Image (cartoon, rainbow, N blue to C red; front, side, top):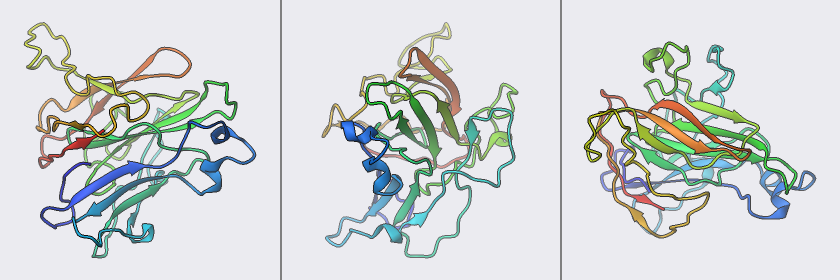
Length: 263
């Protein structure tokens, strides 16, 4: 539950979550799958202003799309983008993004690192005994639900992530169901006290698993400074091995965001 105030109301909270399930046999039923029959699953951020009448209808949330067709093709076919701009009509109550792939759902805890909201979606294979499927990693602006204004992935393979890479904030991981990413800094910083280039792994260093293993606990506010923005995301893959990708998770020119994360 990141405690940010993107809506111009001091003291309000944005509650962010994804929908879907993947723990029952019928969740993989190719003929009658609950995750499909109930319509597309969602990534949602809802404003909670602390009043008794805080509940809002899903149609009152600003709509976002998970596939921006206006973006030009890039050399990496696994990179795509979400909504990059939108006009909002007050009053705003939050935002919602339907997942366009049939059977896709969010069953891994979303979380915020630096100023970026990370959401993993999975679409398991229909075989309940299988390990395959497809996944996507979304990097979003938590305040708006839009793609971050800065580049997230290295789209042109030039070895840097900058403004030229902006807009491409979704990484598809085909043929794999992936776990919650852990992040390692590309710089040696305190509290590792390292001067030899050893990566700092203090962000999300604890094991949190596929679901809320520590449900009800509260994680202390993570580092929201505007430094050390380039991190390596590490994630387990259902078939075998560990995947990794370099990501920019903040921008030195962006505003500071603070939050309190519920697990």
